[in-house]
View (cartoon, rainbow, N blue to C red):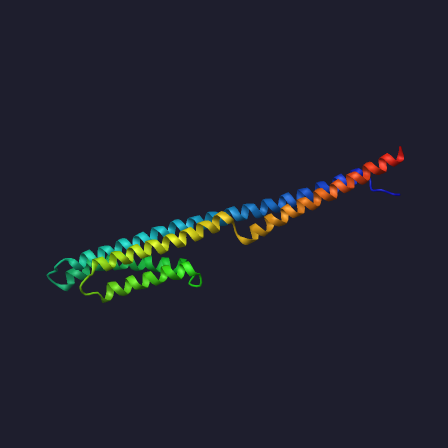
Length: 189
């Protein structure tokens, strides 16, 4: 029986192992970068939510003051409105309206905006309840995103599973070849 020399098998297995390691390194480094981007996204969303809330709070406070004329009121409100609108726009652009947790955050933001514009009596208690609701919904969204970062992207999970499966198959193949080689070597004695 002609058998393949062990040197060829070792070379083939070395090339295979090197290729698998290179592929895994590429996938892992890409996934690490995706996780870094996702963490940056989480931090920026936190910042914009807090800016949105603080500017709406400032708007409420400015509206509580008895202004001598509307010009003074508008002069004080314009930069606050601009900051709140900027934060709101960044939040909306960051969120996926098709994801459940994002929808909840977007709904509360819309409720808060509607409340600010229609509430002539400036019900601060209602506003605080909305702030609590926004904080709660944002925490749910951030937890969802954090879990996504911890678990890794689907390609990473699949690749990790395939790598373990491939390693198992390679180990079985190598053991079979080694057993075959040892058996053939024993036969020659």
